[in-house]
Every structure is written in C-alpha cells, then in structure tokens.
Length: 115
Image (cartoon, rainbow, N blue to C red; front, top):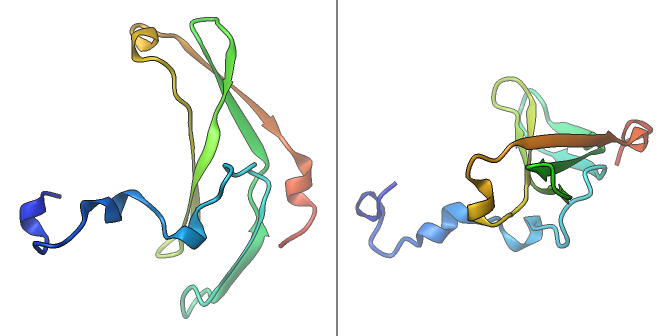
C-alpha cells in the first residue's frame, strides 16, 4: 500500500506492529494457552493451547539457531484457522546458496488442557 492511497496523516507503521497488549516479551514459547471471547456470532468463544512446537534451523551444516515464535493469527472468518509464524536472523552473506535444515520438538503438555 502506498502512502498516496491513505490519509495524509496515516502512519504506515500501523501495519507493522500489534497493540501493546498483544505483544509477547520475550517471544512466545509455543505452548501457551489462549482464550478468545466474542469472536463471531457463529463461533463466540475459543479456548485451547498452542501446539507446543519449537523450531530450529541449521544453516549450511553449522550450529543450530532457535526460531522465535513471534506471530499468532486467529482467523475465524471461514475455517477457524490459527497461523503461527517463527523467525530467526542470520547474516545475509551466509544465506547465499544456503542449505537449511529444519528441526522441531513437540511438547505433549500442549494437549493436556485449556487456558
């Protein structure tokens, strides 16, 4: 979206951040419980746990880097989907021709109850 399609005083950073009460510091562990209320007329409440998955990436056979769970998106418009986003950083020169390996851990505590 270009600045020309918004109000003159619109701050484009609006699209790049969450409200302060929706920011987890430090990053999420991935096994947190959630309770969402007043979602929609057909699905008023959602209670559950994030899946307890931890991810890591190995760059070119080097050391493993933990991926930070930094995004949880609840979309109840059509199929009641929860999208999780993990990220990490590494120097851009190291990424050229890189071979990535993903590792994961599943935590069974995530299935034992609800928030």
